[in-house]
Amino acid sequence: MGAPPLYTASVPVFLHYLDRLEGMVGKTAGREHLLQARLAPDMFTAGQQVATAAGFALRIAFPLAGRAIPAAADHGLDRIGLGRRIVAARQELRALDPAEFAGAEGRIIAHRAGFAELEQPGGDFLHLFGMPNFLFHAAMAFAVLRKEGAAVGKADFDGLHDYPEGFRF
Image (cartoon, rainbow, N blue to C red; front, top):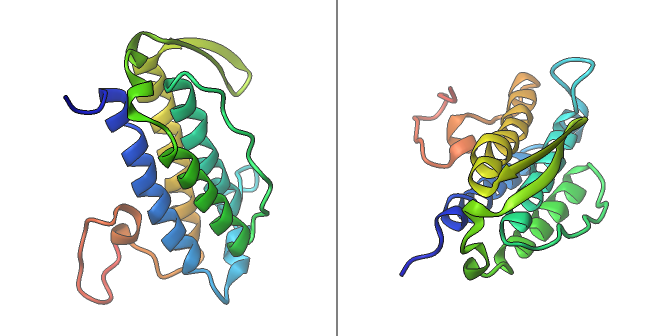
């Protein structure tokens, strides 16, 4: 029998997009000021968006596995620190046993969404809260970097598209 559905819908997806974020952060070498840019004055910087996405991957996967969320080390928000944060998040995710996700759909997960206190069954927690928030922060990091002139495009974001040189969409 395969891995539990909420494992396959979370951990592999988080790992894939953490790899994509690492690649985008890597494209700021020599232009690390891009990580300090933001779309609007009241929004996170690109670096904070990356860090928040990495944090969401753990904040979602660990409760689904019935485990406490590991404390995140502060590696900084520069290119090197974000790379370390992403590596650490991937290591934590890979250490999860898919079997721990068995029955996660029925597990009630108490958490915060901003200032809201929520309790959601595992499926809703992943699909209505966790994955949208993870992808929101990943997409915002992409948008800031793209707006600031980083050589990133849709293929960098999802790792699936392929375009001729010069097309980034």
